[in-house]
Length: 400
Image 1 (cartoon, rainbow, N blue to C red):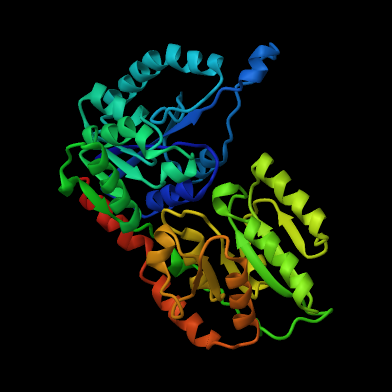
Image 2: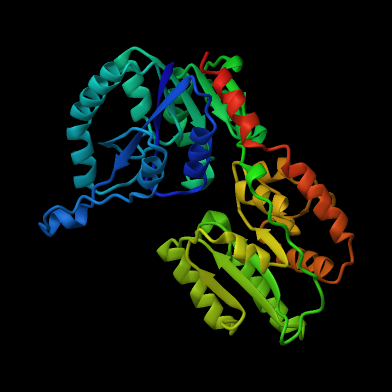
């Protein structure tokens, strides 16, 4: 029995955490998982001297409870990146880090944990714990931090150097991400072993999802709106402003009835900017924001087309879900989406921000100016290549 400690970078269920949960669900019986979850510090509460206000979301915790997977909590944050955080928060994490590492080292030794697997590149706690405990460490790179955190590559030398020097293997969720990572290593002159850099596409439990889209995509009418759906956290890198601009164009150039559903947790500043545009363009009746929900199936059944507007996407989990479900798919030609979608075959690709191009593809799907049903069949076939069981098998080979 091999015991592995997985280091989560968040408590909420984003794409990376969903992928971790899927991985845990399909581990072979000879691997016993343990999980470390971060506690986050609410600095404002301390300033106000409010008692017991160390906040953490227990979404991942609840999922682990369901599966009877042992987990622990410790104070750590996105410490593999140089970010501007409140000075009090930084001081607290710096002060407590040594004690947290020492405490977790005791748990690693007590439980007989043999390997640490960090589920994100932004957290260094797992690498430090592995070094302190004298055990192997695997780093999973699931994000392009340059784009996600808007950091110039010139400022990321330490980030890249730490990852390659403090891990046995570095796992990337797409070839695009691995190639870009390697290019930046070369840019900074960082020595690295190419055999350490491995691509393993994320997998999804597609065999458990049997629902299928049966919508007839017909001309939009008052009683039958043509529904465009976008699923994912609402923030700048996800590019949902394209859909607001699309709503404006649909209102100006067509007489049909359209509905745009933007589904996901919202980042306050970006969400406010989108709402302002919605009001400015007078498309309040067309655009609807829906907070994160576990009932995506019902929303997908009501959808005529799904759109992924991301400015950068390391992998593209939502895209694969849409393809497998059987909804026509339009994505931006970026990152992992470029690898997943073959334009005109298993979906359509447009350049980020090119709303005219997006509009034309919406019309192509709605008016069947392309072979929509044929594209859907190819989408399903492509999606079947991303089975969670294949992903887990490849990841587990790295544990040997």
